[in-house]
Image 1 (cartoon, rainbow, N blue to C red):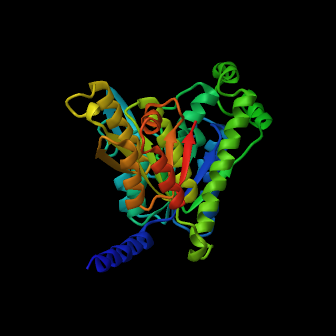
Image 2: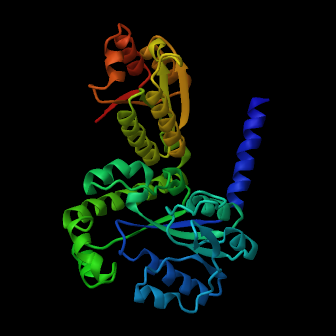
Length: 374
């Protein structure tokens, strides 16, 4: 009976996937590399070839070259909303779905919609359009990918607030990198092709430093390469040759380190296109009546982050963290367990128990890798 239900669900998922619109994403290392320009070029080429393409939302940033490409393209009027006494505009998702173009161009995938919109984020609008069977071409910068948030912050010292879950990028049928050298990008900035004149000097001293651009460029190239490899593994390689990885991220109630473990495990799972889990073992001293409120809040936020990145959450009550890990690894057929680096509370708990040797033996016997994340 269970096999029949599973088979029926798999077939239903196939039907839904075939009905869903195709999704193409342009990724760049920063603003100004030419993502919007490329999307408009593609829209013009599609229109010339008889494809019904419409502009759902484009942000030209008052760039002359980009604005010129927009002329003559069919634009779906934006929805007007009043927020804090100002008239603002958002993409009209319902109008896109009602018009049903073959292809719709939607810029700024990471954008946060105005309060009062149906969806909080534009990527959620795009998911709705894809579900309606409409093909979407969109774009975002590498710093807006959720699991890269910490890496980008280390490079630029800037925390990007608008982020897109990795599962959205993984849904893309095609991911294209728009690449420029650091010198080319800085030259474009100095020529006033990215920001207005009064913002150029500040940009050169902050985000647009050559060393920042090089590191962001590397991240963008790696991200697109991993997406291409994922497609090769799932669509080209024969099923028997694919190693089905399963990752288990073990977290404690420490907010910062848990976030690192979650994001890094998400990157690994995304790379291998694998199922992954986040395990939190609630020990007696962290029971609901004893755990501090701020730790409870941190846990809830981390569970939310993990869910957005595509993980399944496992919450277990146990006096033995090690035994709980062993049991879950066995039950879920885990291939790799990810924990934080040694100074973290979680690893201290594991190391301080007599069962640690049993954990290592069990992992070794079942060919399970243990990854300690820095």
